[in-house]
Image (cartoon, rainbow, N blue to C red; front, side, top):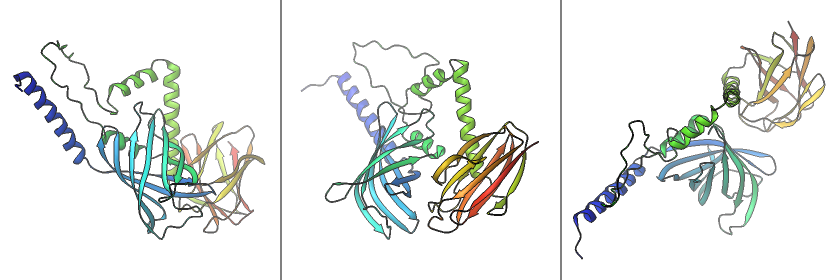
Length: 340
């Protein structure tokens, strides 16, 4: 068969494109996603993904499930992003080893379809698990990733510019405008992201909502990162003078996650019931509608490592108060907010 010059040129350009794409994915730096996996029965474990991109919106690598870094389960995993960019599919397909990891549930392979929020700051959803050999269903639960830098790295690493393939001789090319952006696959600078950005800021209400969400995430990070300054327990209350009409109360587990549970009362009204502390701060906005507001943190249990401990930050405008509450079961710590 005789090939003309245009056919040969078209074939060469296609070859260069696919070879270049393969080189990009094979040499991309590995990335990590660290989150939390909860399984039925109330257990909560660390869950880490080590991934490398293998194609547009696809990754492969390893998953690690552990409560202690030295006792871990490792599996091979494949990850894919849906075409609309709203769902991340995570599927473990082979168990490699179990180095001393123990759980009340059967060790299972994970299969999850996780939702991605609009800001690409949180990935979470329900999980289905199955045994490695019989492929039968076992424990159910949830999987959550909330570290924004890691999530952003996931999307950025998988972005690659698409090179336009040479057109046929009969196709007329449209000149590229000077301000036209090159389309990127799932890149924060791509056309989809730009469209979302314009949509967010089309009205003042959208701008206000975007800013409110940004401040909410910033407050959570501030509360999580600041060191503990004071300690409270039964018989050792703390008084805080506040100037604002509303203060923000953050509570979380800043140490090893050992499943401490607490209930929180504001002026003896239950506002948080039997809550299991995680590393992500739980926020409660408290209106200062009286001269004196009582906040009680009741220890429901003592977790796996007594006593029950809770990291707390009270945010009064720009003023932060950092507290560690600790108690045995059925005892409580108290914070008194005094209106200035």
